[in-house]
Length: 437
Ligand code: PMP
Image (cartoon, rainbow, N blue to C red; front, side):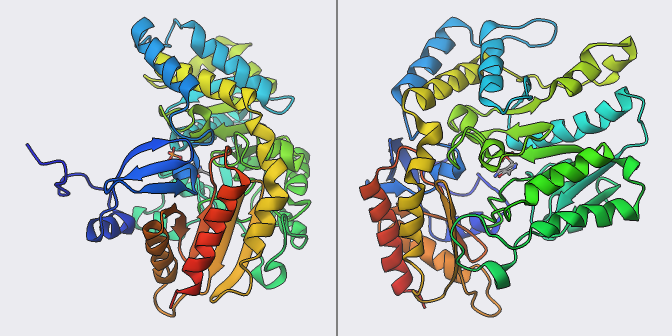
């Protein structure tokens, strides 16, 4: 058998994985706001794992719920039967969702939840006899996971270009990020709401009655924390309503308190027809995703002619007992500790701390909302990613976990973070930035 420090077998073909093998950084334990690295050092978690451990690590209620669940009921199929916790979690989730979204389908990840939403959108129009609606619209720099549907509607060209045509009938709206107008704006930028009219441009390219759905992250996360200009999402909603197009929000990152409300939808005041979520749903512990839909979508499949049953969709692990138990305990932890609104309480402090980095070497933009933030660095010509990756390594040396995407540093600490820990994280990052070449 391989030794525990044998790095040969486990593989993800990302550059990041190659970087890891060049300089291994193993995490071996975690509690609250901290990881423990293999060399015993405590690392302040500035990213909530991968934007998912919103309640912090090893929270007692969640640990206990998982332990109890495995003793009680390890697995139960959700096809033609069920178990109570899946229904309970669906109800709790529907209560948290914006008014008008009240039915839940469970998946095992964000990527699967995206596929589920895209298929549901097309099947919904078909169920209503509008079978010609098959087009899907995403946005440049949108990220929707790594499955085929998700990379098709996703706006990262390098993620999809080698795979040929992928889903047909997909178009991308313009990126909403206008650095030339909005650099260093505090919170949501003002400029660019009219960019939503790009949807009309696409609608005119085709017959709008062939468009099934538009999918956007209300705030793009992994492509660099790109905030929607004020009014942008409202205008998208309006255009979708005018043309009978479904609006899908991918809230895999913005869900569960990241921007100071249960969902970004509530923060931005726009209700989509479907919300895709994952990550914070189970505090990142047991994989689970979900799609929350409006009654009109639910009813299209669950009432009316039998042929609608043609929409076959669901996974072996949809709503499985272990994930459902973890999800219920996670939502209970958020509730008991007021975590779903905490990002709003800390927003001013967090934003001020981040914006104090303005003027440090190479910093060309700072973005913030709730408890999420980005520090964009000027790329070294010919070496995009190099400068931010150097910052990541130096921060890790100092006991801080940050995340980088290109030359953008992204921060999204667990929602239990205290003000002194914000100072430690951002102050430490400032020290790192001062030493960057
Ligand atoms: N959508 C968004 C907005 C995401 O940020 C992610 C993951 N970072 C996904 C989808 C995919 O989720 P998963 O990795 O759980 O498949």
